[in-house]
Length: 339
Image (cartoon, rainbow, N blue to C red; front, side):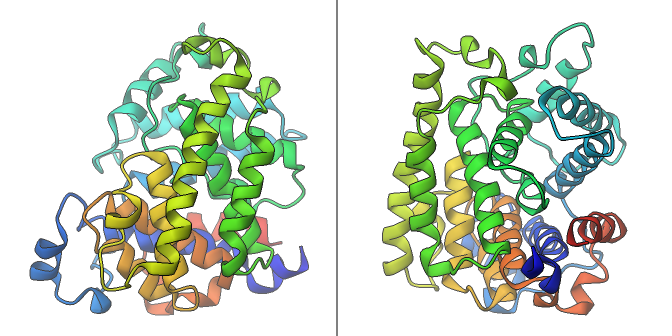
């Protein structure tokens, strides 16, 4: 906890997430040759003016405010968290600022969450493992005082509100765990092994207290087999990441090694790969992530969150950090969790 406060890991992670998002937002949906032709060498990518973010940062903030509301009312628990985050997601969906090409899964689920007489599980898109859940989960790796069960259960619950596929749940859990490990000083060289151990340890553990009967919406014969499906896909991508981290050239598109990031496990792996390639060069890491053929803003926001959690608030140039959109909200939540 002392380390977290000293380097302001929460402020660093949230700032890095938003900066990566703003850097990758203009490059999303473009191939690397097009990006290079339009913006020049990837190592020289500059933060756009204005530094507008996508729905990735917007939903991260919605989750952060929802968790803050739930914790202001008492210990973080499933019902209270689901209610407050549900309301934040509905408000985001209704907002006129929700005009940043959000994913269809989030739009469908948030519209269904408005049916107050239905449990949230009815809104969950059980077959979607898009990256829209794990690109917003970083706050749960930054909040001090949560138990392991709270952190994992809450990470999976926030995913399940929109993306109910077991791989989306597992990837969100892994992403929050990676942020927490880095915030607490884990060495980047150890990170893949630590995540693999965590995945194996949790492979057959279904968080029924947090997820309720969500698993029954799928076709698996038991909750344990439902969640194991997700962890197995994450374990497979961690093996690919382990190989890539040792063999990939920084000059090659990371998506070629670990996927384009449209789905949850690939977004996690490719965001991590960009961070691991430049663990001590956070700006270079988000630039590399933004110059990719896939879901560039989500990949870059994850790379930025990992780098900021590891290096803290001073990782980011002041000239960039001061002008990113939603700076006041990012600083408020960061200061709350760094305190």
